[in-house]
Structure formats: structure tokens, C-alpha cells
Picture (cartoon, one colour):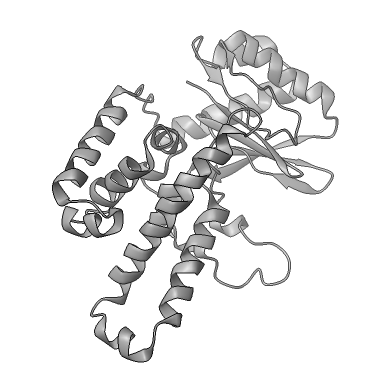
Length: 277
């Protein structure tokens, strides 16, 4: 699940990939299973191949996607399940939250080719040797090294996110929540970087800006406008991808949000997500 989520940026697709890998494992004859000395390594290799196929088809789908596509936020595991079966362990509970699962990092991964992403994540994040990565990609070890090197250049070229201490991040989230509740545009402008950029991901199913909104002032006006158009919407302080973030609730339904870097609201089948630079 850790590998799949970093490769796909989608919780649902990651769960599907892991389930497919296990389906293939249990489909093996007992004798073939006995020949595999490391089932965990076998499952990781198969999961990587499945994710590579999904990434290839996902690119085509996302080219037809309405507006921007952004990675799924990962809520705190304590809020992951609701209703019947909530006491059962969920694959998301096993997610390791580190710098490689921050929303900003996942967005950078989206700029890579599928092969670059697989080589980079498996080697630089999970420390798999290139010989094993070659088996996943069907390329030579040397070619996989080049793919990882190209991916690293993309990471270096990306704008480095501002480092914010956990306490400072939580305080910023709280202040944004208070300013939004008071519809205080001036306070929101003061809290946002003047060069901030908000990207909305509605998928054509939820009301969301189709193009990025640039500048703290324009973002603040947009946020206040949302409050006017959605009476009864309540902002909540929540953990998202291991960092302080925001969620929203309206009419009893939870719409998950992001933190200082991300804000996502799941509205029906759609979603609205914003990245503050």
C-alpha cells in the first residue's frame, strides 16, 4: 500500500493494485508459491508492475479530466472508516507518513513519466536496488539509473516548499479557519503568501475553479465566496497526510480538506483541492 499510494497518488487505485497483486499470488499453484523465497518482494514487484500499467492508462484519462487532477489526500487513520466494519483494520492504517507522502511531493511525482516515477519511488524512497527495479520496468539496470536521475532533476527543479514547524502549521490552519468563519478577507490576505496559487480539482462534478487562482488576495476572495455559496458549511481542523489540515462538514457529510499546502473538499463525487505556495 505504501508503494502503490506513492506511485498512483490515489487511495482507491492503490487499494485495487494491492488487491490485484494478492489475487495473482493466491492464483499461483502451491508449488510455484513454495519456489518464491520472498513473497513480500514478489508482491512488491507485481504491485509495481500493476501500478506502471495503471499510470499509463491514468495519463490518458487525466488528459480528458475536467480541470486539474490532484492526488488524493490521506485522512488520519482514526477517521478513515465510518459505519459498519469501522473496527476492522484498513490498508490505509498501515501507511507510513513521511516527506515522500506530503501533498507537495506527490504533486511533483505527477510531473514524471510512469517509468521515472516507478524508478524514483522504488529506489530513492524505498531503497530497492536497480536490479530489482529493472525486473519491474522490463529495462536494464543502467536504464533504470538514468530514469531515477531524470526524476531527481525534476524534483530539484520544482519549487522547494517552505518548511513549517508542526506547531506553526497547526497555528496557521487555525488562523485560516477563524478568518474564513469571520469572512475576514483582510486577515486571509495577511495569512497567505502573495504568490500563493490555488488549484481546484472538481472533476466536473463539483463547483470548482477550472483554472489556478493566483495571488493571496484573489484566493481570499474566492474562499469567502465559497462561504457565501455554501451556507451551513463548517471547517474542521484535521490531520491530512500526517500534517495539520482542514476538513469541512455540511449536512452531516464530511468533506476532507488539506493543510497549509493543500485543501480538499469532497463534495458528492467531486472534490475541490487547493495548493498554497
